[in-house]
Image (cartoon, rainbow, N blue to C red; front, side, top):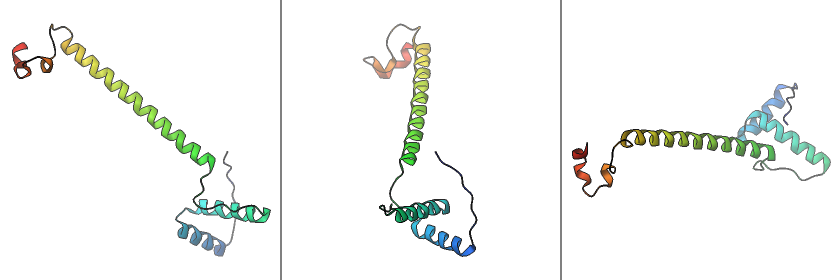
Length: 113
């Protein structure tokens, strides 16, 4: 769960944070978060994290969004298939015989119309 926190700092510290963010190609908020986490890890004597390390909740959110997008596209494809089937049934359902392209002389389809 993400928590929003507000704090004030001087212009020099923000300039250092902005420079750090620009060097690593991340936005300011992500840079502040990385610096806080690495500072806390160093204070605790634990292993410092790297910039390429993914957080579990970020990965979960990305996968969840991809699953929802995939589900929506599959539902859209299902609707299109139902529509095409309905159109084909309506067009060729009342006629006796096969579809024009399935006959032995498919090029003479206009004779059956």
